[in-house]
Image (cartoon, rainbow, N blue to C red; front, side, top):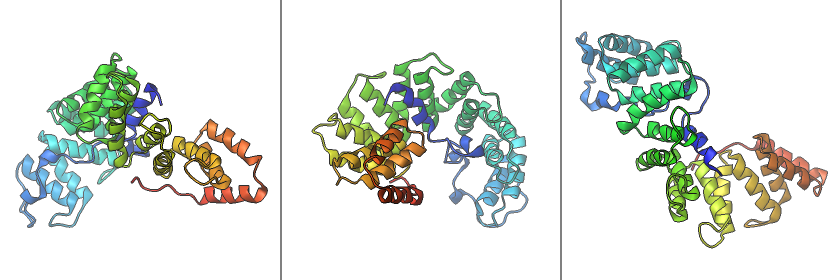
Length: 335
């Protein structure tokens, strides 16, 4: 694993299908107030932006009323039009996800900007990711870095991690490995698994920090325990290569398997190799072929070559069984 892979790991937290690509922040505008502060009794016509915003939350969450995303948006729009920053942020999320309104990334970006210019950290982080991906705005990494920094300086963990990836890759900012490690650390200390993995890579490679394998192992372990496949693969690799202490191939198998079962192609290829060699597991050419096959389907060239070599020592029935297992395989949830 090399430094060029830091940014993809950092971005893994928000890469998804369609508009969901932009939805980084899972906690929706925490400064808006808790449900405990909002009456569950039907209200008279709300007056003022704050009351209108809270009425929108009631319809969004189904708090004392039937959940109605369209009606929620109506109330959010009333509040947002009066300059209510939290309402503007939530309205941006609604347009981004197509909840209560047709999906419209451009309109989402407009409302994120309105809220972000008032200092709303969630909106700043969202707008930064829109500029990262070209969602609703022209792709512009320098502009992305500007907005991500605003959110990161307010303590938002995911923008901190992505800002670190920009410094690591030199996209939109001058490449600075120490600055990258600083932002990864801030996010990692808040418990963000992707940032913990990135910081582990920094310590493993000596990128922006002094090389320290025990610290690398510790940060990988924190991320792996949260189910992050990249970190689980890294732990398997460290166990197998002696870098974490005495070689423990069985621990390598355990971590490779956890990552492989999530669909991590590197782990699938390495697990296939261990099954082919009988290292840490009983030798099993059928399972080796299956894991190589799955990794090859994800574009792993090493796995494809290994599968071809393995097929030369397997009979037709074994290959058919391995192909069947591959077809039936389904990724598991992170654990």
